[in-house]
Image (cartoon, rainbow, N blue to C red):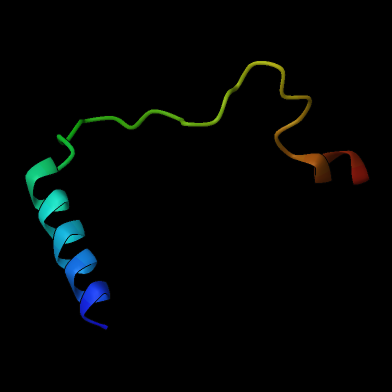
Length: 46
């Protein structure tokens, strides 16, 4: 249990030292938009 608390403390310290992600006015997609066949597969049902 002590080992797990040590690793939790080290992980928290690493997160603190990493800092926050800077704020942006607009977001960016993390998924690729090229090569996608369809974004709404249910449109072809009608």
